[in-house]
Length: 588
Image (cartoon, rainbow, N blue to C red; front, side):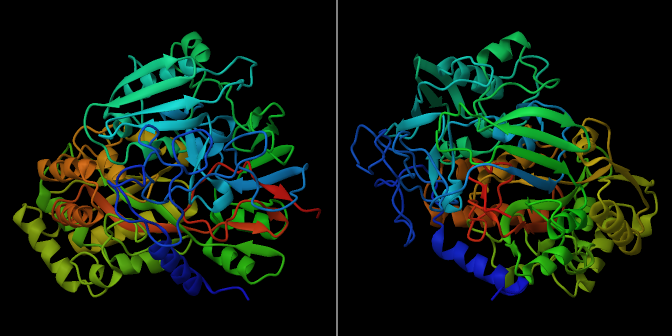
């Protein structure tokens, strides 16, 4: 029997609470708290993946969202992942449906990783075959972590070739991460802050690379699993002056780029020379651009697409009721937000920011916005480590269902700032993605709340979703976006890159020394109990001095035809778009 949406969501949250240990470092040795029951211990850093522990080969500590177990090993490819299903069938073309556009082709400079990540590999990844619960080796076959956790070395896989036929080696890794961490002039590295604690990258030999930290980051190792942390060829970076925006670079990944018809479809072919001989199973991918969630769901329901990562709630409900369709609800560490420009008036005045934080009824926003499942939440996902409990969130100003007192306080703050009933305020521009749920629902709702409760006039302007990030390069007022995301269950990376002073994705130009100090402590703190207190302190600071308006974290609703196998979507512990090399299809 299929579960209702609320029941399935509660099941998922319960699974999160019992199956994921949030640790701050990347090993299961004595530095780490005891793991949660039912999670296997981390594999050792040696390349035999037998779980053997020794002092010279320490494996990285588990990521916050998944204690790391020994990966599945194909007989001729140590550590390689494969389908979790017995006897997967090879061949066929899989058709997908989601937003498949990108402003350019350079993932490290903000190109769409959820489209292009399958062309490439990372050093390590989260294991598709077990629902992203463990780390699987990709271009690295083993790793060592120093006793003080301030350096780690990756042993690289030999015999790997890029799609253009060139050989992979340590030069590609050092060139890739030097560009991310120390971008040359003219290159914008969106992930720079996530890796900024790495002070040095050393090529030990042709197949060993060592990273040394300049300051503690207990979550740093885990960030190498991020879908955007792909490795590019050194030769291609050099030939293109480190700028890959204008064409799709060769990669080492399970699929090879064939064609992109902008606004229509991407076509991939299986990489028949892939270093993991087990993968991929399908011959071809047709990634259809379907921006509207309802249309995505309709495509799956009618067989025009085989699966989608995220469909509308009404089509999800329909699919969940049918015998030929499967659906799941996945915790997502991304949220809906309105970024305002903290570098210009009136947002330089915290009274105005606090008023705008208080003046919107988030419960009403959840009911109005029915395209996705949006969850009442503060500055962390309900599934994130240390997040405030739901029953507590509902009692906090700004998150109450009966928000009359919050609106009154917001109006007093605006009056104290000299803007009673909107007097003295100009008309502001709110830019939104042109997708219907944003431009036609959330943006008008937000504008109405600002007008109704604060007397603020807002004009809405819609742009193609892939162009929304370009707005942050302008002298913007407000932008409704979904760029708020954490790749792991520990939200410290998210806080670091989004709101610490000068961070590479701090598009709102927020700066708060107290918040920076909390994040610095979180970066070095390995004790989950102490981190919980720091997360609470950080959320209190953001409520009192908000960097933006936060609607809440969403849950993603993937849906697929029953013949689509190999992705473990039913029990996956979180959403991760883009990678599907373990997918295969039954005859249909």
